[in-house]
Image (cartoon, rainbow, N blue to C red; front, side, top):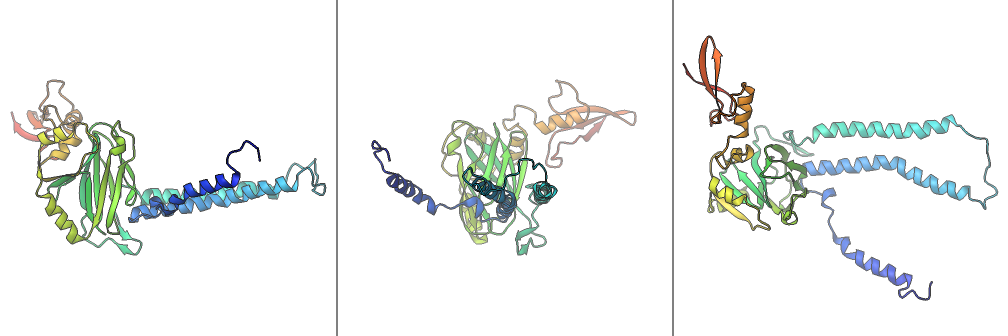
Length: 347
């Protein structure tokens, strides 16, 4: 030990052990989640790691073994300067990794399809399939700067930075963003899914245990990113119904209110909206919540129909059918949610 060393080695080790002690109580959520999809993803991580360790552990052990056996002081070690090939050794060196890669590829291919976030659930957990006729709870998710908006179309309510769902009921998230790309992530529920403006992604998942779980933004999106967090509540059916009724006492979320809400703000408290203006989420998704520009699906419908140039601001086009001019509309209505061209009148 150096004389100028102020802290003996034993003292430093004790300090490191004391610093690491609080970590002993940490919960590794990713490997011990409370939702079936996240559990299957955790199992995939474990299986893949074990398969790779079948190669890694022997290689690391052999490195130590060879270094020890063929050290300079070991005069009894075999010395074969002209040795250059062994068929058996080559088969082991190349065959074992190849088998591991084949196994990993097969598991990854199967899991990629089975755990596809767009794929509707076929089971509640490993022991229970989804009962026939079960409808998923639909939640529309909008990533704002820097907060999360959750719209429940069936219940007609919305919340800021608080999300709830009944235990053991499939959930279908429809996810978009208002400005920049973000990532929706509840570690206890499922893997993260990106939220992108002008696009809709989906996530099908289920929570299997009652509790409150943290949700975060997993993609840097600006100054307020670190505070872009929310709480996901796993509730019983009765508790979820009570939670819905609690939210009904909030104000209405109109387009005007949404435009104010869309403005950047940080660390927003939970807000509740008892009513949501019809078509708001679709307007947000199609980048026309302000009502001053044509919606994206209207533009795409016009383009698909041949287009009419810059003057076609109302989504109307003319086409020839059976020798006469037919006026058709590409505007989105409740009867035509995709904005497909529909006959209006014949001239």
